[in-house]
Amino acid sequence: MKKKKKKQEPIFSALEEIRIEKTEKNIFKQAIIPSEIKETKEVTAVLKPETIAVVLTNPSKEISSVTTVLLPTEKEVISPTITPSLPDFSFVFIPSGHFIMGSPETEPGRSDDELPHEVSITHGYFLQTTPVTQGQWNAVMGDNPARFSHKDDDYPVESVSWYDCQKFIERLNNIGEYRYRLPTEAEWEYACRAGKFSSFSEGEINELFCEHEPNLDAVGWYCGNSDRRTHPVGQKKPNPWGIYDLHGNVLEWCQDWYGPYPPTTQTDPTGPITGSGRVIRGGSWFSNAKNCRSAARFHWSPNANSDFIGFRLVREKRKP
Image (cartoon, rainbow, N blue to C red; front, side, top):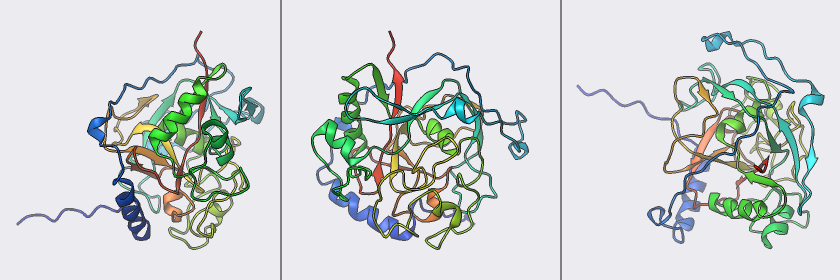
């Protein structure tokens, strides 16, 4: 007698899946055929090890024993800077350190692909404090692809594919002394957690769907409070490291191909060599509460775009 396969929980809610299916049908009529795209090997630039601050977790192999986190002081971590080039971007320094990536089995709303494992981030980096805005995109690209376009340039840009983001980054990299890129999935979650292991930066999750979730409402725009649209960046409370809109407003492209987490400790992971979709993180105005958790992870075709997907930047000093 054959055993029945365990039904996998969908990546998005039922309402989200209907929307995604309609979006993909329209997108892939004009999409680039993946086989026609030459995938180049992506190399992450390496900075010299930072010495001003380190985030540490309990080194025990038992994940359940991680109970304390030593956070850097505010002066050491939060140091926003403005790029000297046009347009202006605000960044905050993220120090090197260690954390548990993924979620415990007891976390409500978790998915099977959130296997908890220890990750070391050995090099500090600067992360944009908000998603890229429509004004910033327009200043670089000369257009505004966002569906939710407003007179206010501070709304997040959306409806941009992973490849569109790479074109934007390429233009930025031709200007000034800095190098820009998307964050890796590990860098994104590390910065999102800011030394915490709770569902959100404000605390644990209590409501899974679109009912009022106080710990999420304080920090993000989701289906329970967004009025089915994006909102200007930086309006909700930032996480302890001064970063806004990590839980909702728009999902954010990461550099990695999507794949299962390894069961062992990882150092500066960059994901699989190839895959069928690029990682997107953070939840959106359209997402239910469980999909805005720090550990929630999804993937999307790099050719596709949606009005609930945007991105933020990592900034590095150019190598001499």
